[in-house]
Length: 252
Image 1 (spheres, rainbow, N blue to C red):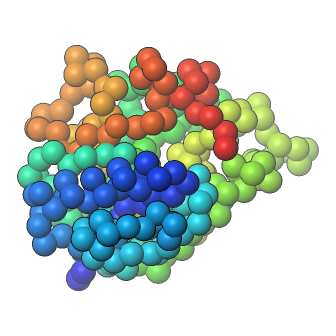
Image 2: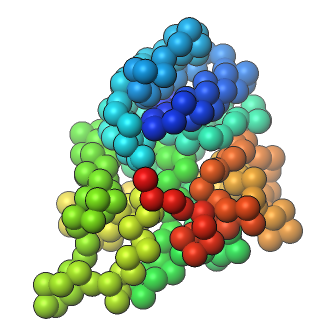
C-alpha cells in the first residue's frame, strides 16, 4: 500500500510558498515521505520538484483543495492545509492513526467555540474540521471527495442550498453565512446523503495536536502529547476568530 501526503496550493502564490515550506517540514521528520503537491502551473519553480514526489496541476478555485483530495495518487493519504508546518517527529506515525476508519478528521469541539464562531446552526452542528484529513483512497472515498468538491462549488456560487418543505432555500434552518465553509458541505454529505451513511468517519485521538491552530489558547484547548502540526490559518481575523461576523472570511 502506497502512503503519502497531499498539499494543495491554488489562487495565490503565497499559498504555493507555504506549501513548499510545509513539504520541507514533513521531510525534516520523514525524509522518505511521498508528497503530492497540487498547484497551478503558473506557480511552479525549481523548488517544486525538489520536495514533491508527485505533482498535479489544478485551477485557481478558492477551494481547489477539495478537487485535489480526490486526485490523490496514493492508497492512503494524509491531506494537510498549505498554511501549516510539521513540528514533531510523531508525523511518522500518521498513517497508523487511521485504524479501521475510512476517514479521520480533527474536531470542532465546544472547547473551541471561542475560535470557531459558527459551529452551531438551527439544523445541526459542524463537527469535522477540514484542515487535515487522513483517508483511504478507495473508489467510494474518492467519489466522496469529488462530491464534496462539486457541492462546495455550487454552494460557493449560490447555485445550491438545502430546501424547505415549500421548495425554497431553507435559510431558517441553514443560515446563508454557512456558504463560506467547506465544513458545511462536508456535514451535508456525511449526514444527508444515503450513499455515504455507512462510511466510518473518526476523530483523531488527542486531535488538536494534529491540527493546532496558532490562535488556540493553551488554557482552553488541551493536548496530552506534543503538537505535531501547527496551523497558521489566514481564515482567522486579527482577534483569532473564524467566522463571517468576525471578519475571518472574505468572498472572492
